[in-house]
Length: 142
View (cartoon, rainbow, N blue to C red):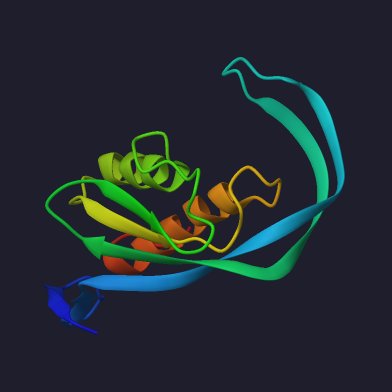
């Protein structure tokens, strides 16, 4: 793991290494029950669901960068947006704006089919947020 520097965020002001990039797995899911409850004011729907995580995963890598970007590779990358409509990039930008963090590049190695009902995009976004907590000093998983 390459290190970009140190961030002094510990109570004792110890130098904590900051990685250049971090990688994690984004699991697919299967809805066992899905009930649409109603339309929210933002255009999304409230749902009630029971889901099961499955072993099918995407590999998500987040790296420090000069600009915000997302790429999709792998056997199931067809149909995955590589622009501002990508959920992982949207999530990263929103968090980045909130904590005033530097841009990142997100690489998605896709094994979960796009638009297959397996939650790949949402899982990629959630995994991206968890990885950013490791990449950006002072950001926690909470």
